[in-house]
Image 1: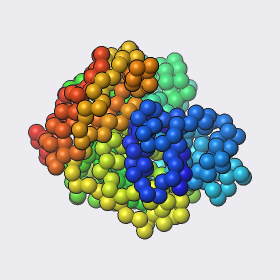
Image 2 (image 1 turned 90 degrees about the vertical axis):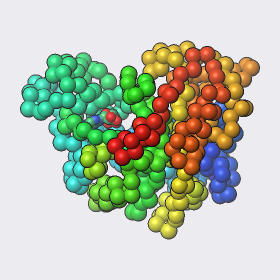
Image 3 (image 1 turned 120 degrees about the vertical axis):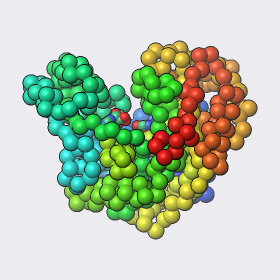
Image 4 (image 1 turned 180 degrees about the vertical axis):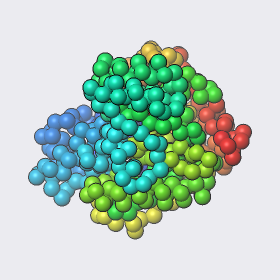
Length: 431
Ligand code: AMP
Ligand code: GLY
């Protein structure tokens, strides 16, 4: 089959790398891709917002599967557009939900309402809209700190404010509801109860009827060692996660994943593709913080390397509503990924630094993100430059293998966290 993959980060490089291993694949096209994905498929500059151009591309290249990496095109209705195009009828399966399903990520208020309608454990909340600043500020008085404030819409992972300072929380509410902070995304604000626990990311793949759990992962969101400094897109990830043991994951399956898929069906919301469940482990009980309607980045860079099954076989299961007959087989080993970033990220940083040492890595996958082809070789072109993933028979070996390879890759202003996975080694029970 011919596949079009949409996106251009390390997650999409991992998806491309994984799909390229499938015997079911004829040609993989990637829009826009990056220098790393070129090893696995053809880059295309087709503009996915131009439906005419997209339709022509899909027909000309006999594409039967469109895999959407990031959330934004889904929230903006890419799947709906493809499904509504008479020229494409019955020809193309989109991996990623329609706009209605993408609301699970596109609107925090919708997601919270959905969780409550289906008795999915989550933090208590209230939503306030434009003109309700006073009521929102009053509400702060009734709840205990720390205060958790969330812009309703997509805000590129930056729309969450957690503070114990009531003054700061009141000011943030004002900026969001009246000052245009986060733009349209902040016109409604969710105020929710603070959950005290440890985070873990769980994933499933579904055709809307049945679903299969994929490996869980832990993401390291802060820029600095020891989880310090500002939030980022993610600086590293580990899978499996020792505290997310069999019993915990069974609870995630029974109390969160299954009611979600049942709930979508009950509400008549079709859903096909990946679902990311951002969880908090509160004394062994899983609570759902948020849904994302895609794989995580950098989680995909450890989840996909552990997936033994053919990803295109699973996608074919979605296309034919036979996912329940397919198998998800997982490698028992541990995968660790370390994100190599440009110094200054998540603030400002320099681009165009020449990248050396890529040919010296061993038993590692280097998934490219902020990289471009320079006149003499690859150069940096973003904050998160690449994710380096290695496997190991246990977490200690996986960490050692990954960092051994990370140090082989150099460029001016190279930065990475040096402690990815360390918390999980020291005290696996509480980490
Ligand atoms: P989100 O954008 O919803 O993933 O939130 C960003 C981060 O804020 C999460 O990864 C958590 O670390 C934290 N967070 C979100 N909601 C809560 C909550 N209710 N209690 C504690 N921490 C939270
Ligand atoms: N790593 C978190 C995310 O992809 O949203």
